[in-house]
Image (cartoon, rainbow, N blue to C red):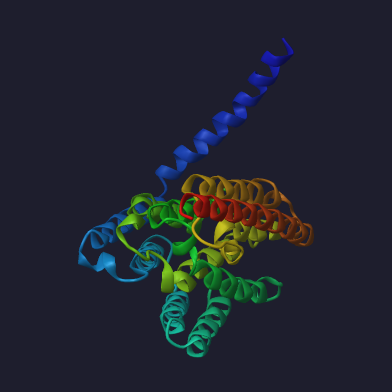
Length: 296
């Protein structure tokens, strides 16, 4: 009898979660993202799909177009994303010029992107753009390109379920629906576009979480595996990569991201990232040993 009571007690929560997801499908922001994401998918089906970073660029451009049509004009954000994209491509040739472009883009994003300048968020956002972009450039080497799109879409979904203001996050989720499976068409789907792509994600989390500071941290933690590529040597098995990323997203968003204050969230996030690093190093070493035994 007790078990039946507990299950029935969970039914309203399950129904509420399903209703939230169903409600997402009818929102203008999601539909705008879905529409522009579909247009971007058509581009990826053409000859441009072989360009380094074209998948990430398509995600950013489609998201910006959806913001323009469903949320409102954000010229400062568009300029910032363009500089982040330019900085990412310059980084491939000259890291100093690349860092200058990324730094300029990050500063514009914090000053013209609607981030509360009286809080710690703008400075932290600049740091997160550099962190996520620098490590995100390696996502194509540690995760098979066929799965990196799903990894990034899971991050978008994690931001959406975390931040209180979900307008912009709905766009990221909508754009990713048609694009997630198409990362396999490009040999380097993210690569040099990492600063613009993950800078966009970090900005959406920062703006959407303004009313609950811990949710900003939770949204950034949804980047999960993207933030920890420096700990990985070689390519992770796809299944293990997805499981680890899903675990990081789940704990970061549905536990830490639902707290109120930022400081406990930062401490919890540091612990989570430390545990994630340990797990990824263990998986990476095991995969290397197995590969050596199979191909001595």
